[in-house]
Length: 417
Image (cartoon, one colour):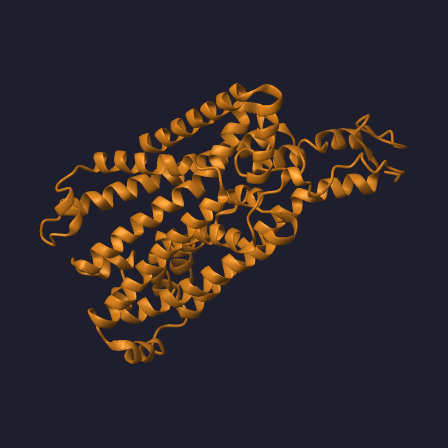
């Protein structure tokens, strides 16, 4: 393709104010970290039992590096089509490539057409459509929606099962049993769905950063409870003896097949949050420059905390380490507190995971009403204000009601699953 002179206004700006959010690097890192860390952290001690201290650390490192690279690559890929078109001579006034008659090249540019109204892509689906075409974007839509709603449904199920077990536990006489004795699991799941619904209706990632911080605090609280129980209660070996026992742990797995075939998936699942990254990118004030830093901060922090936690818990229980380390805790105040903290964590994780599926659902159902969905806080507020001035408040109200109906239906689907 031969380069040509392009009018300055024919290529969309790489970071226009209409596509900017409000969140900074730290708040985005908090949201990403919350997507990664959670109940899965409590399965890692058993993973390290199977893979060994160095084997588990290496596997965690490989997955962390892969997650960092792929999430940063997604962000970089959002901007590369426009840069390519600028170099090759794209004129959006006539949708053509000057000085080139190749039908294949014209088809490629048509597929990758970039205008001010759809750049940069704000979801997996739009990026897939611009880079691979409509059939691929349909497949990505289906898989992303299934991942988002499927994971959210497991959150509701886990919370319902956990609170139901506490509610029926008369032996420990925990505060859940005292407040709501013997409530069935279905009731707890319904109450959970009612709790996460207003959180899922939120459209400001500034609030999400706060709720994510609460979720991270709950996870760290659960980790602290587990470590305190191991040091003071069972096995109660104290801090110095715990550190000493670490030196006797196996470094590598006895069987590579059993270790990585049976437990590597737990680590991979922990870091597989790429489908959640677009709403977070859209919420940032300067994602092109700052998002990659947020990813590095979040992934490296989660990797360090989880590796240390897994090794220490393995030092506590050795060969007796259970699939979920909370099963090593005896029934009592420590276990009750840990279970409640995990439920709190999942409640605050739900809206972040859910937002990815909600965004592509709204884009599919509502079409081009709002390109950036709800994630782009600054842009949305300006767009809504403009719509209200030009079309009246009734349009904005209709849009809000439509979004609310979509969100409610999606949360209800998660509950039904």
